[in-house]
Length: 185
Image (cartoon, rainbow, N blue to C red; front, side, top):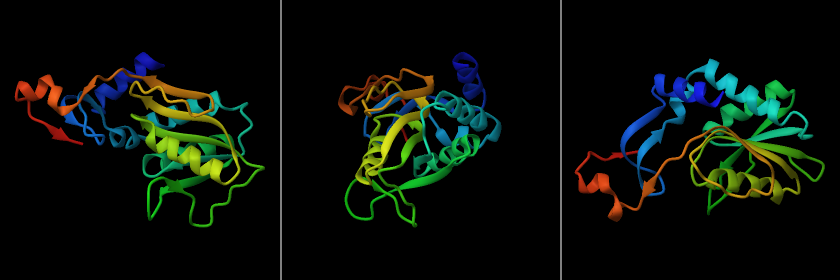
């Protein structure tokens, strides 16, 4: 599905070429706009079906996703697996994520963590840590697109699409030197 998925994302305007400043501050010539994927229920549904199928035998009893895009994915993957979905929100004070709004997790829970576009892995890492802080086990991590990150979450990981995206520190960015207009994402 990867080649057809990439073509589909390009056609629908989710893979943008140009000069972008990423949330990390680094610059890149390719940006994957998750909301241009999530706006299409057919493509999002296919990606969620792939994640649900990949982790069907992982023994999960709940699916968790970080705000914002992970909320939609957690809901749809959980729906396809017949499980509940919960949300890991940014902590109100300090770094990391936490489960609020009455979401319960404990030592008997086996959690599949899902997210949209994996860039540095920070949102997923924070969600995994929030799950483990509650004593639950992470049985897998599923993402729509991996932009070339290779973090170790201590659980099997699956990306529906792998895309290598080169990035640079601003001071060594050729696109800056060429005066290509910078888009802040």
